[in-house]
Image (cartoon, rainbow, N blue to C red; front, top):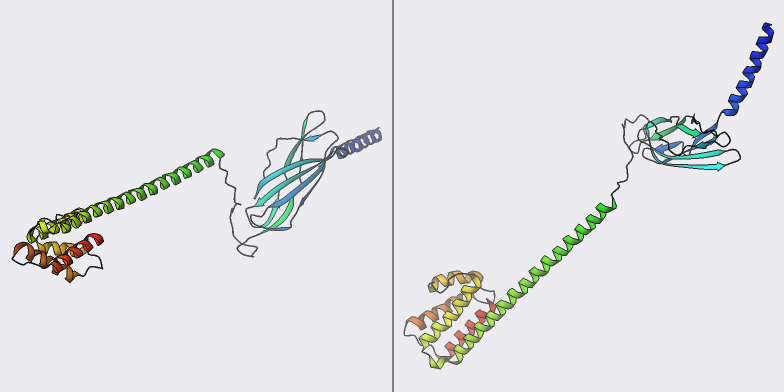
Amino acid sequence: MPKIKIFIFCVSLIINCRMFLRAQEVVTVSLDKDKAYIGDTVELVVKVELPKNARISATQNFKLEDFEILGIDIKHLSADNNSYELKFDISAYKTGRLTVNPLTVFYINPDGTNNLFFTPEKGIEIQSLITDSKNANIKDIKGLKKLRIKSFFIFAIVIAAALIVMLAIYIVKNIREESKKSKIAVLDERTAVLNNLDDLYQNRTNLTIRNFYYKMSEILRTYISKRYKFDAMEMTTSEFFEKAKEFLPAEINVNEFKSYLRVFNLARYSDFTPNEKEIEDNYVFTRKLLELI
């Protein structure tokens, strides 16, 4: 009787073992590199043969210690032996001899029940870019992640940049136009003043020498007052000379300008009577001042 029980137990054990072995998934794992630098992309390939009509679950949450999973690709290779291939792009953020720990992979049996298998471990040597030492102490250096900017923000940045450029162009254009207007206004005013001086000189015979020099000095001082924003009409000759010599152009000799002003004083306030050549020279010098200042 005991022998029969032992025989039945052995037969049952053999049958169960055969059924267990048939139900086991055939899983292999490989890496495309034996050594890699920190931050490199390494391809982890898992190949598995599942029971007939079983399928890999579409939604999975894979995690690896010491590695970041950058991408996953799952392919059904063959229906004959129901084989699948799972490719993982992984990147290490530690150095040394690391182990790619087993992944838990879920699949669905033909009867709709859930099942799972574990991938084998796989070792890899991760080296540092900084040193060749295997004992380099680099802690938790993670691979660079791509920045993801929503298209709305990119569009907003482009619009903002375009508006700034347009505003800058508008401001520069206005500044140039104002500068042109200012130059035109100065030229127009200078032309009018030169015309007044020419008319005065042409009609000098109708005026006394004193009045002629007074009016010629008035034309010069009035123009300079407006051009350089100070009251030249109320200044003495010496005061006017000290102020005006600050902005005299290089073409005008300072001493010549001082002598020119002294002649005006003599003609306006004494009995000095310049001849026609002196009058013409004073007119030409006044005109030159108006053109250059």
